[in-house]
Image (cartoon, rainbow, N blue to C red; front, side):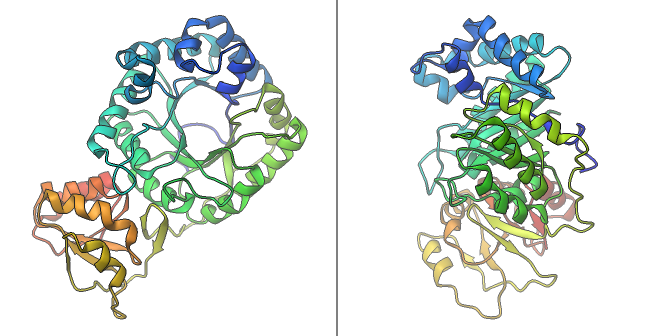
Length: 397
């Protein structure tokens, strides 16, 4: 955590949408456009959180991407709305940090939908550029539910110097609608260069605690907790947040229905709090798919090579090789990369990929929603393999 760019613990603000609604925003409008058109309301909300003790405010740019804005006929307003909201937030910040909220793309890639990953990336790249140009200090991808969105955003953010935080929205069972869970998301995204990862939205603080504890021994980056508040009074909510911090969270704040009063109650509990120490050797040596992390031994034994075909999913399920600890999949062309990406959720083991050309390996790594192992015995030179592995957070073996 020594590389984290800001002091810890870090206190974020509360729920933008619910506080704007309480100040008069109608339910059926585009929040981003409404906030941009009501600067006095936004100023009052943001200054309320700063007065309560927030270290930063978050520009309400949550749905200011092309896909989400199109639902309101505002697809061409990406640059304008992101710029206006960040500039307005900067004026309200009085020298404090200004983060920018980034929400889901509303697109799902196979096997959950039929969207193209490159289209998801382009949506995020457009918004990230707009936020960078507007002067945001960092990005907070919030209420994320699919690893494809999260990976696309991190790849887009890594094209500039903006720190990127990611929080996922899980249910009371700790899963998103695409079956993602915190641990595989953390292992995948921190390997790709995310600066902080954690949880937000509707599940309760007490639901988050075991998930935080589980992640704490596998993290090299700060953990975030931004739960909503359903019915707790500010002091009760603040005490539950302190338990989350004891479980491993060092970046905290609120999501829906958290008000300046909740932040005010939490602020004193941060005094004297020392961020959790990262283990000298956190156990991060793991491959992953969206729903599961596969921790690896020092010595890996690859299975017989599986070819990418319409039967790959069945073969991943049926593979029964007691000697193999890793499933090896050969990717020979771009179509194979798509097949692997769509079938990977069915695996019962970590997956290693073998490809003999850089473009094919790049595609396999790009479209795989998780963390792959690269079979380094391929025909690609090490000086080519290493940057690819770093870009996508893959493991060279």
